[in-house]
Image (tube, one colour):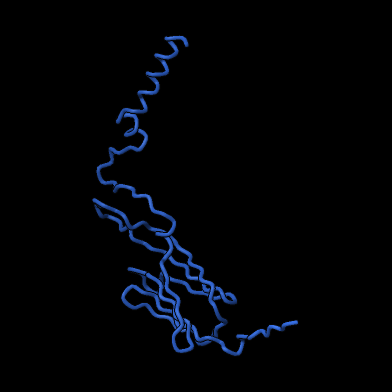
Length: 148
């Protein structure tokens, strides 16, 4: 290998190891900018519990800081869809740590039973969205199994 080419390659490679290079790339000179923390996809989707209680399906979803104006609930057949947006970034604030990102979310939950759509109820209590879905027992069919 030619020594001159090797020296040039080493000089070029060393620029990527210097703080000055990376500071220029990420422009960390902004004193008021909050550190960026990577989030996994599961952190964007509200966590839910689904259970049966007294002939109802109950869905509880974590919605800290949201009101009913931030959330939309819809149902398509046996698919419950919860969409909304977390708006945590406030103007005119000097953040020293900013871990809660502004983000939209969509949670889809496949329901184990058909439900009575016109009797669905929902509320937000202590940061938990509670959806009460009456089970439609008339549409639950038992399928007989025959043996030959």
